[in-house]
Length: 249
Image: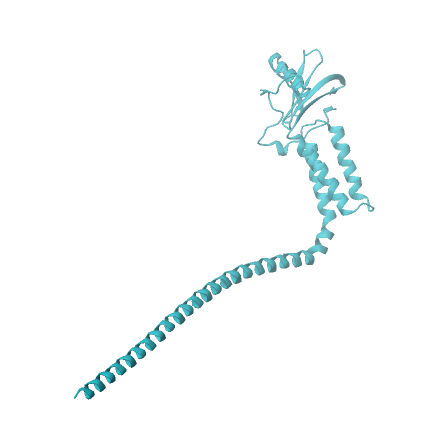
């Protein structure tokens, strides 16, 4: 009776072992599946990241291509209009010279001889066929810069003051483009040029003292300071004024 029991127990052990092996095989497959899943997820994340980088690159590249295309279009347009621009350049330069001459003639008449000589030299340059367009433009801009610089500076110099048939030596003082004054060597007489009527107007004693201080400032004999003086122009209509040859440097 013991042998059948032993056989049954052995069969049970074999079945249990087989079940354990099957469960272990299933668990191994599950573990392997988890590893594969994790690897697939990692690959998926990497692929998504690569796709996002590629998308950003495409956006940047598309923007760069668009800018380059716009630059090419502008250059092409410039090339297409180059001949027209070159043909129009002489008239443009002459127009700028005419405007500059009108400005000088309407301006406060300081350094008139020097300024008109500069314009006459520019006129000859523009009319000279042997001068290149670049040289013409360069000289024109140089003359414009010289005129613009007057508005940012002040200076004084000795010169001849012409009033009617009389001439006398005086000290001139210029403050930008808005103040033009003179003072006699003894300081007893002085005046301010008024573009409104193209005449010199006398200054009183206090104003002449200020003029003397301004002259000393320009000669580095006095520290800069605020000078209170009448102006030579009316700022609201200065562009419409004209000035005669009342004084020369």
